[in-house]
Length: 257
Image 1: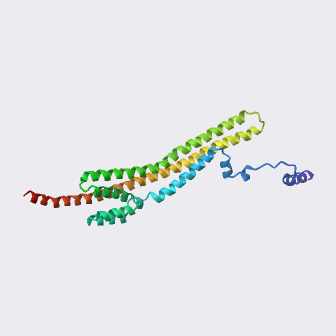
Image 2 (image 1 turned 180 degrees about the vertical axis):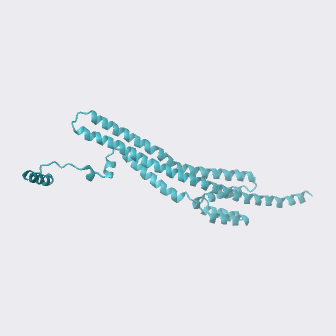
Image 3 (image 1 turned 90 degrees about the vertical axis):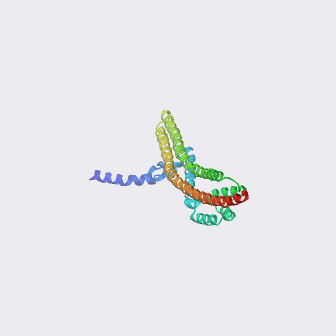
């Protein structure tokens, strides 16, 4: 009975003594004092580059959602206005409307109409070539914009791998040093740094590639819509140019007679 009483007293008194004894060392408990943010910030200087890449990729995704959309490339309102003005032969009015709109199709129409008004005797093939060149330039611009996400998707894992290599070097350096029991703490810190950098690089690269694939598909659909809109505009111009030619032909024949 005395032995049982002494064991219970020891079990109750030992944690209290550990908490109240001023001479006991204050050892941090990793599970309660170390957070994920602390671990990330202590994972070496490479993590700052990865954090900058993550912020930049999020900004790109937000901007692409706002700008890479159908209304920014081909809008139904502009197409309806362009169709009505072209049927009325109001090229100057359509040119003014194109200058006020920021859609990609408006820029193509503005280039075409600016060329036709300055060169009224230009061949229709030249007009078509100009429209195709401008449309290709707009399409290349859209494709080049989304490649930034692909670049981040490839660069981020490589930067994470650099941090991994640095962490492994620190771990083996601590393991080979004669520091007693402290080298195991340094070893675990180096391994932790290596793993955190690897995870951070993959956590940034994988979503960047996913969003790149998403926006690349959207860009291809928008380019198809742009091609269809440009073809419609050129078809109207071709019909009107053919009509003007047929109207001028009888006059030339009468002059010949």
